[in-house]
Length: 258
Image (cartoon, rainbow, N blue to C red):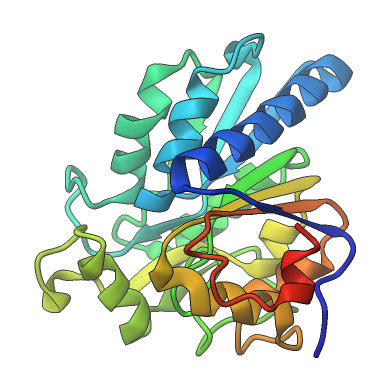
């Protein structure tokens, strides 16, 4: 059975709040280090209910000069009105961005030409290296909106338009973001897997029984686009924080790594 790469640090916690706080502590230390060494920091955030504990704890961390931090996010639906609360940019504004005096917040706005919007976002990301990505894992093993049917672990693009698979869309309903499956957009703009992995550090937090199969696959399956989250094991500086439910299917030899 394949084991997780030694480069992926695994942290097992009792509950979602504990996992989020621990992940936030590492993210905060990463930001402090970037600010001390380079005078600024650039961060990409995921927008999902699973990230709420991390974001709340990170906003409360001391000694971070947020006025020198530039924030991005990793994906956005195509076709929703600009003021729709389900938009990931809107969710992050409410949950995190508006709470802090950030230097800049760059939101993905697909607009009438999503492909052009993706290219503009690519250029913003490319201005300087990304210090940190805070992310999760989807129930189908996706990273951002790189679902197994469309994920490319060697994607030549940094940001692109993708079609969402039904499992991904169903997750949005199950997590209370949309009332019905037909309400969930079928396309989105997303950062690709190589663009996410190009960051200096990755901090992932995952919680819940509904994520346990995806977590198991991410840590023991061969690295491939069949489970995009397996790519976390290829990064040189990545941490994965799990609550007890998300870790419940892991074999003992993998649990011992945490």
